[in-house]
Length: 215
Image (cartoon, rainbow, N blue to C red; front, side, top):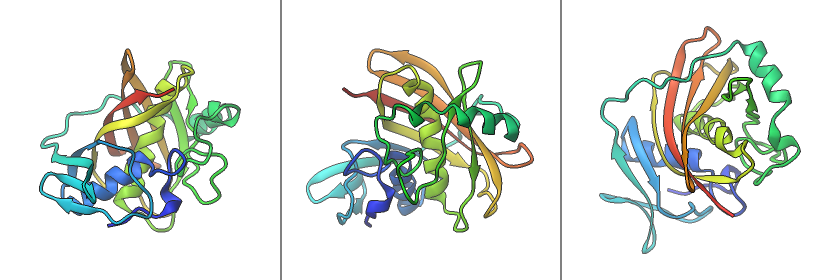
């Protein structure tokens, strides 16, 4: 198992959501909790063992079954509202990781999900689903919109743990909406929720995550 350099988050490391999706898929756990122990390395051979994902002698992530996944309370918004919110994406003017595969304006080949802040404090962004739809792509889409609900407060965060479930993969080319919300911030930790909704408003995937402030 290897994370190609394309799927970066912070410089030199993998995007947390994408990597978590790859690890969950490799472990054969459809509803999984992935805890990142160190920033996932890029272009490095990784091994899946009983107790997690390893890079040589370093534990990169632990993967556990999430069992039954409770409802995530991030309601959908109309696509047009998400488009309007994305125009005000804070990362266009100040971004801790502008080359991020998911939300980086400077990434030449990323998902280009730019979550703007709604009047109620949630985030929302449109997402045009790529031609090749994979579970890791959906995990990645769930990642940054939740994080920006905390990052929008001005302090940079990185993913520490994410629990996600995919009800159905979106169709290639579908115009989806991703929404996120911060549910609690205490010290350096922020807890967030996120969801991907299809063009008809149906929830396709959801996540809960813990983000850790850096810097």
